[in-house]
Image (cartoon, rainbow, N blue to C red; front, side):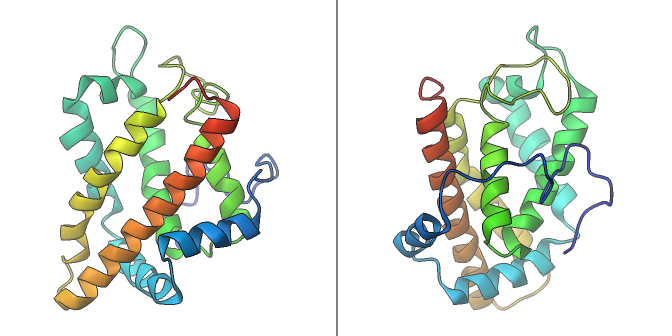
Length: 201
């Protein structure tokens, strides 16, 4: 499995500290059917992973520095309660953000992936946010902020998929597969928020 670094701060994919998802593999398969996620999408996500593999830093910098930093109600989630920058926190979470791109594209959507989806979601709620990095920031990221930012990520990642000169038809299929995956993931996260922290919408 491709990783951006051998030592990604706080990255615990497949680790013993990651608990089993409350969502079953059968439920995951049902959501995949609902979103229309097919074997062809899996193939094109793998291709997207190869295309994006050496661009993850630029993508995350564009999202974080180029977009989120200019939206105060989003930027505050990686700052102190007083609004001061937390560069170590931002740097560590950026690396995990980069790896998430590769995990989205290249990991099999099996039990380990499903478990880590729960872990990621928990780290955005008051149950685990800030704990991994030992910082003081906002107590949680409202689910509405996550859902609302999905179209921005979908739109802005497409040029990176086209950056290696692939045929337009292949770029479109890579992008469609990516969009389906994010819809799938946000469905999983929404379920966890609803079950565990329903007041953090």
